[in-house]
Length: 450
Ligand code: GLU
Image (cartoon, rainbow, N blue to C red):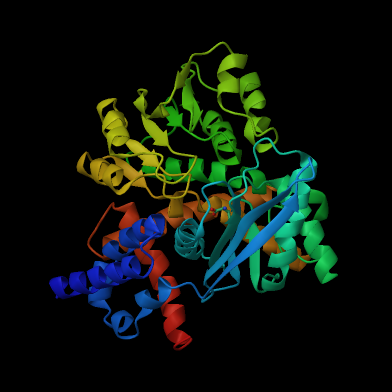
């Protein structure tokens, strides 16, 4: 039976590759999920009979559009915009918008696919989607960013809505960009609705949404550590990205007694052995999210050594938390971390570890939390923002934080339970994939062939 299921999974993966050979990130995301579903597909043949996985790897809809805009010199620029509406079985599509030069349809599809499982794990009624553009926000003026966002929304607005598809931020999209896009949507739709999350507090946002992904990652990490009867107290942690996710992860990790000793970007990293806290953390917080400045500014400001051309995964640490982007932690980095004593890895970014890295962690007994579980606190709090918009009420920080904390504990428990039930105890990757899949798959079975 197992061989038959393995052959069935291999055929689906091969078909995905054959149909879209130029989408390696999407292949990687599908492959990781599909293989870990073998036990559930074997025990519940109805999923195979009804071709649930075959349907899940095909977006319900993918929109690809031109985004023309004029820069400050009066030169016309043309970018590509996307929105992938991957799966709406359990709620309106939900997921961020990414503005980065590396954005293409394959990247959007991988992110939208991951989002389906992540959103299901939160237990909130959200389907999965993702969008963005190959626009580089670095070095752009506020006026350029506004014109870009307005042009982007002029096309996207007809495909989204508070009960249809609710975008939010991701890399390169923060409160400023959400504001510009919200303003343009409101103008076109002539309606004030909760069509985007990550809004500022005064016009429909939720307290704690900026903190949520970073705090949620720390809450998840605390749960993982608790399975070994330990805590964050005294732990040394290496991270990479220093945007919204990284900065607020540091804040919560510091609160819980840990020390975060690295940040970096695609150009290199800085090692701060005393830990990033106090004034240094306050300097760091707006460095990317507001100023879009390189990580080296942190090293220059505090007289620390900048290590050019390397990732932070070479420093000794107890825990590694990739907080930047896909495939930022490869097999060699994983080996270096293991050799330097790292025992825990939790992914705050989306698919930051390569398959080789995950295999190395597994072989070395390093506890590994995948992004779709670990970083779900961001979208979960977006879900809470949607609830508050519908209620026309604002909850207090304490209330939102308590819900976020409860959701992260719930995700951790759900992953462990699903892994245990299907004979892979302690495997968070399998647990997250199986729990996310079964929730969405059961809804798809209930709703017929759509
Ligand atoms: N971009 C975030 C993610 O990867 C948040 C999405 C949202 O809040 O909708 O989950």
